Length: 534
Ligand code: NAD
Image (cartoon, rainbow, N blue to C red; front, side):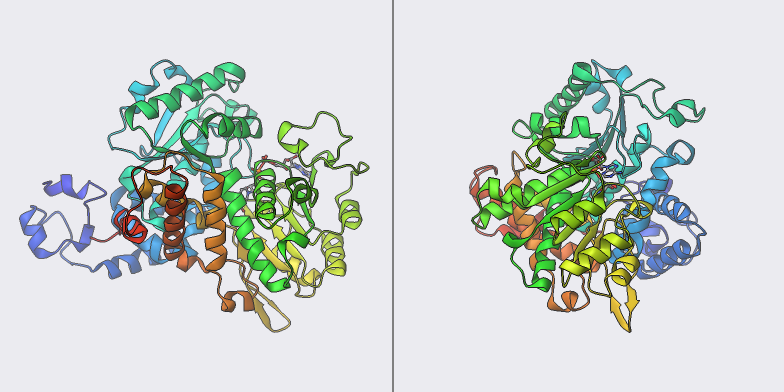
């Protein structure tokens, strides 16, 4: 039992002005709080009032981070109840500003920094974390959103993602551990910034890097065996390799590759309900062939295989255009993860020409190149397609391949549009159209909850395709009527729970869960959910 200031300073036990008169008396809080006793509803009103009157989104981010430090229950309650309004300040796009300014906005300890200087004793440092973690989000800060190498600034992403685990799926915040591996940075601005809080050295590469990550993974396994580790915002050259290296050995996934893939596949399945065409007849052109692009391609290919195509046929419907042009067989020096999509065709350096040549039904932008879906591209897509599907997924908002307004305007209101960061609804010729937000938060919290509830040993691709199908099934006709290909964010806790149940079912069916399947998967998942109530 904590009393007095100790109690008020414990963010999980603190209720602030909501402590009742009896509690104040018992816990020796009288006099330490202002006299008014507020309900949690009044506290939430106060938070929203405070957030709204801040003059910048970064200030809103910092205010909410402060609230999380003081009163976690209130933070998660207000976040879960007002996700549509608050998620953009806790996660993308604002988290990008916070990561960029991390060394200036850093205030209080949250998460664990594991640096190269601690090599050989990572387990000891990990033991400094005071809570029994079960979920880790780990980044090395090399490819933060579409912003590149932000070094230790990447911590903002690990923290933000874990806040969404708790807010969207009800995973208890004490089980969540944000980690940043500081292996140096190649960002010249950070290296030259006297305030930079990370190691001032070039990034570690090669075998030594892999050994450092391996030491971290072994430390996790020895302290909390079976913990779920989410790899987040690693650079291309490491992300695919690390996932392959660890996916059969530990309980890991990479959200940029697998989570993005699932949320995009779900959006595509919903969009096809609008066009009335089958998945097997789509020709999909990706702008960008990195983690997101190839991850999405691989999951769509496996969905096509589930629908009866051979893997070769499936892949032949997926085309990629990267910074060097169209990915074709005769290009040399292609990275390993692109080779399976290098089809026989002549080279092409112009994206507009590639669109003209391939006549895709779907464009997926994961390039970080703002404006790449220009007027010509969108108009062309609208010539071949009655309802062109345009997913401009690059984050933050400033990197989106086109805006929602442009997509609707240039397609005369026919585009089915979705983005990575949120766009406001657009009025086109009297109709209000709702852009979808292909937010990974629809997927990873539910997958995490399902893995935790079933104590699954590994995270498999079939869990992600199951999650995608559940998400798509949660889209109502009323959403589709306004062009929205995802459920409203306000539905996310319900959606996450359904995803968790399906993921747990897959875990039991694949023999990956601990013990036999229970009579009720719903109850199993229900028991793992934390509700932010006093
Ligand atoms: P990445 O660095 O792995 O890949 C970027 C790709 O873009 C590379 O293939 C690169 O060659 C290509 N590219 C760069 N410049 C280009 C140009 N001028 N023309 C064509 N291609 C070019 O990054 P990633 O993880 O694949 O993420 C890409 C973007 O997608 C980021 O902005 C990220 O925030 C966003 N993303 C969105 C979601 C979502 O909406 N749910 C999820 C994950 C990633």
